[in-house]
Length: 124
Image (cartoon, rainbow, N blue to C red; front, top):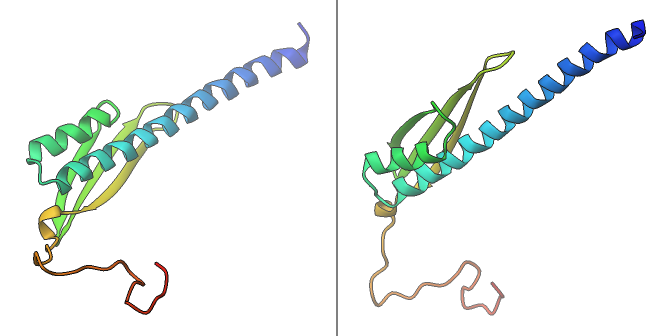
């Protein structure tokens, strides 16, 4: 084995391990985003808090934390997870959804028009 190979092989091993760790972290971030969205959708439907947290945890990485709170007519969900590896990494994702109970319903006889359809002949 040459001296160059003796240096190159360990460097390639370290590079490969770092690449696998980065892919694992990217996958965990995507899981956090998906979990936050799932939780926000459940909260918007006025599901009980336990159902919202369970929906978020089911899509989150193992050991992730879920925070849920309401601000006005918006439900906010934050999912955070720590990823083990050579550099400890904390990931988080937030999602926001409009609460269905905050949306007013038009009167039964009221006519609604899409934006831009003000009767002036303009297309939607």
